[in-house]
Image (tube, rainbow, N blue to C red):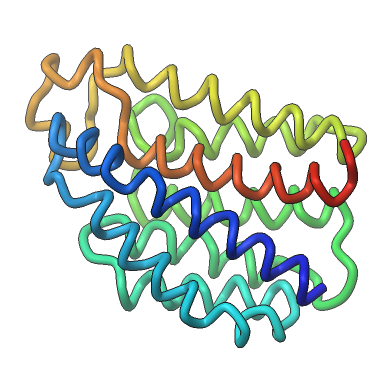
Length: 206
């Protein structure tokens, strides 16, 4: 399990660092312009704790990673991603994790983001990626279905934010001028979903 956890961390860190400039550019268009820098700082901190996190059971590891993001990431991203991971961790079994266990834990994380951000789908936020992924996981009958479904849902959810008018956060100040831009939080969520799915596809060959 430790090797798999380390692989998840490596993939997530690499995807965020590789796209930090893009996340910043997306946020410069409709927000504070600091999303890429904040996410880079947070995931560099998680990378520094890689070995310690890998030695923990999945639930404890997710909770510790979430707390790290709360402590290291500024703006709204830290509390939102931190709440997501901590809620997932609390809902995760200590031992083996089934697809149903993972789907339920993911749903708990999504609920935590909704509660923390007082938001829901359709408001041009990370929930427009996480919500459809939650649906895909719940509807999947096999790991292969889940990985393909989650990846497609993340891509479609991200693209859906382009046509939305933001009603939450700094982007909401732009009103209709927020339309025709991808949401940076949705993009970082899609990147993380892709990273986890790619690791699982490599492990299972699916």
